[in-house]
Image (cartoon, rainbow, N blue to C red; front, side):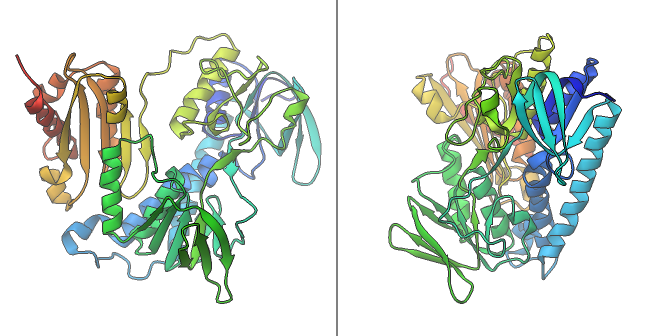
Length: 467
């Protein structure tokens, strides 16, 4: 541990990018200080974002008996009366474990931590102010801004912590609603809308644009929307919000521009997040942010406009995934100390933990067509696999896209149970520049959902013109 206030690197934030950068720098013998304003390390990812939402999802699917309903019918439940307390119990257990692992990782690698809010005094100096107002100044040759994001909270939304929440607050909800309006059909909004729907909460998903999750293959989104409608999730696309009010009976009334009213017990506002940069005093170092508080960096090095100051994770914007954020943190630390990290892979998987899951890697059909690549698609439905029958799956599909010229795999798109795990087979073949022959010639465990790769591969092969 470093007893002085001088470090080789100071990291602001201990989320995925911050912790990965700190550990990477420490592994090569550098002194590192991680500044964390929360009570415990882990950042948004551990405390209000990735881990809590996925834990909540798993708890909901287990307690509701969701995965068994294909066999036992829609009324099947493992626990009849599920309360908010049931959901919280597992959540806190998981979070405690995550924090302990992280604290141990820091102590094992000699990473120092300072609890408090950090702000720049000069390009190499940072002041950290604790909860009780005491402050200390630290110096470092290199800095990494990994402060993450916070929910966008516009003035017209009457947030109250009782029945109008942002996406950080929803995990501490006091009781389960019977009806819920979700504003914003981005990744976070879609995840929470479908998680609550799996609890048989009546959900209305509101999105001002006419489409959502536009980076996902359109055919997959059509399949996903069909399943949501089948579950009575009301989709209000192309509907801008005019006003939100809590009426005399405590109901939340959302007025839409098309004249419709949505009246619900509870409302989740999940329309975007903004960089948590406003308290960093970035003017002192000359770094500018965009209208959403995000920082622009050099893509291959993670350097900001000030070369010794780096930024990584959600604060730099898309793709804002825990997985890619970790890699960005590692790249920043390697570059800062003269190591050459390997180039990032051309394709990385995207996982959306909705119910059902969506996961995708490579090009969508829309992108393939735009690039005028001759192609063919293969489709496999999970109900066509023996494993799907055993699991009682009525829905779920895999779509694979191949070049008819080179036979190479171009993209894999999955919606359904286990999608985020299954995608890695496609990711490996894609990054290793594999062809359709891999899927045709190889044997997959039977019965598994991974068999869908062979089914989809054969489906595409049957359509492809052969010499």
